Length: 373
Image (cartoon, rainbow, N blue to C red; front, side):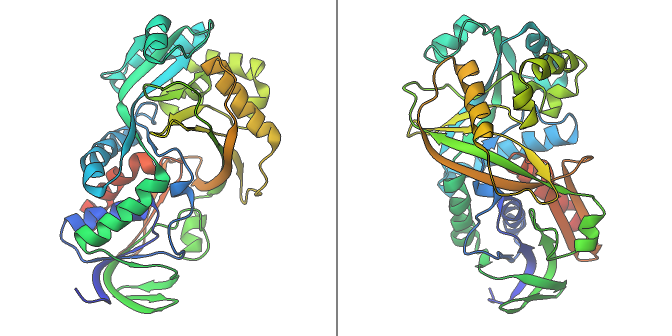
């Protein structure tokens, strides 16, 4: 393959760009990925690596997540990506939360999911969960990878296994296929997929502005080993009011009123709980959500306190020591979970606008490229 002539240029080396590179390369296309940093360093590695199906917005997002989880499961072993956990356990501490779970199980999204009793959960989760626990929603559809491992491993697999070329520390500033003008010269490609993440200004700023996007800053923590092993990723009541697959059900309104009254600070910081565990037994815990056109980089101690408070409520144990803290930023929209636009005939602009990139990336890439190529 020529080092400068390709069928497809993908701008952006995060998970959305890598997914498009994989789908195109698997179809036999010559692909180059153009990434401005030396390696992916944004939202794609600053998350749980939790491939979430259950709770995704009903309809297209849920279907895309189902497909994406299947692709992750298919390629993980080939790419040398360990699957750290499988399954979701969403703990409920109130009758209102149980009502939401019951309504969810009646929908098509509840396929293969079930409500398990507190005693059964405590048995499989080594005693986790306090006296307030009313029940637990179990889903088998989820899996979790460690993002810090998965993104570099996927990149290396695409490079070595599919011949995808990577141009790192390179900025694409003008796209007119077959010419992609970059900070390191011109790359020839018949088409381009632009995956800018939370960069709204470098390429197609006027096109992006039409969607009235904002940015969300999340805060996350790594905790020391808690001395127990979770059977899967754990969530709690607050998630039922945040994930649209639950929150758009009528039964969620009563739960939200209850939780807003009881935990106003958590709602103010956009806190809901995800607890993931790696093979090293450390916990990845989060997260919070603060929205702005440009969120400031300062994460307050109060936000961390609320995250750890919800951990203590759900786990019914004191949180282990904090080992690491970090923030991440991603694009958000009020009216969509992702977008694909056509700013030029041979160009597609693809952005996930809901923090669900790892959960929907391969489904999105297959859909976009089936229509485009």
